[in-house]
Image (cartoon, rainbow, N blue to C red; front, top):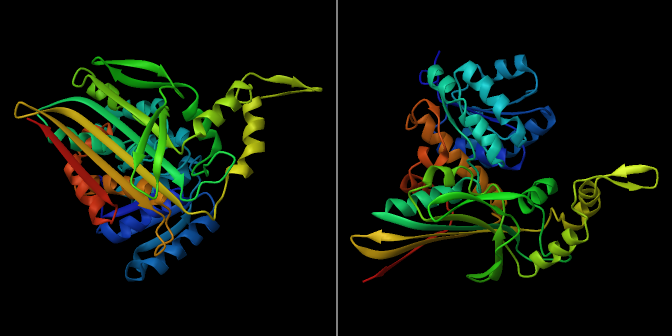
Length: 397
C-alpha cells in the first residue's frame, strides 16, 4: 500500500514537548483517522496521550500511544506500516535513519530539524523517496522552519526580492539572572548554534560567516521591548542554497534580551566553551561538557512562562516600486492548553507541513521546506491556530 492510499494516519515519533504539540494539532486540524504517539518510553507516550485526550476529548478515540525503539529496524517498521505521514521528533542526528525506514514503509515524513548538514542528508534521499512515492521535508519547526516559510510568503508578494532578514528568539517572559534566558531546548544545542559557522547569502552568493557576530539592537512591542540579535547557525537551513542568485541578501539571527551576548562572550573568552580536552588533575575533560553540566541548572526554569518573537523582513520591488514587507509574531505560553510558546510555534508549524503533505500538496521526493510549503497557505494556517501575526507593508513611491 502506497502512502497515497493509506488512511489518514499521522504519527509522531518522540513524545516530548514539541511532538506532543504536533499530535494535538493533528487531532484538531489534521482531519485524522488516527494519530499514533510513539516514544522509546511507553510511560512518556502514555502520559502525553492522556494529556491530549483531556485537551481534545471529542477526538480521544483516534489517539494511540505505543513504545517504539527508533534504533531497532523491526520496531520502526512495525510502527510505520499503517502510517501515511510521520513527524520525526527524535534527536536531530537520527532523522536520516528514520527517513530511510519511512521510505521503505511508504510513509511520508517531516522532521523538526536543527542541523543543516543532517537536513542535506535527508534531501539526498530524493531519488529513493520519489521511487517509493513518498514526500520528505526536513527542518520544519520554528527556526529552522517557520521563519523560512515567512520569507517565502514575503517573496510571494513581490516581483523581485532583494533582501531577507530573519530574527527569532525563544525568551522567558520574566528574564532572570545570570543570562536573562531560560532553556527551551537542550543546552548542547544552544552552544552549537552560538559557536560555529552559519550560511548566509551576501551579494547574491552563499558565504560562510562566524556565528555570535554582527550584534544589533532591535525593538519589539511591549512587554518585550528592547532586544539584541546576532548570527547563529541552523536557523536559515537550506534556504540560502535555494535562494542563491535570486536574492542579494538572506540572513538569520537569534534574538535575546540586551546583555546576553556580552555575558556569553565572557564565558567563551575564558575558554569554557572549548572542545579540546584539557588536563585537570589526573583526568582530561572537555571544557564545554563541564560548562553544560555545571550551568544547565542555573538557566533551566521549567515553571517560568516563555514567549517567542519572530520578525521576518523582505525588501524588493513590486510594480516597479520599492516595497518592504515585515511580519511579526509575538506568542506566549497558552494557559488554556498548557503549551509553551516554543511548543506552539515549533510543533504547530511542523504539523501544518505534515497536513499539507497529507492533503497531497507535496509531490514525491525530498524537498527543502522553502520549496514545499507555500507561504500564504502556511500563514493562513498559523492564524487559524491563534498564533498572533502582524503584517506591515511599506511602499516607497
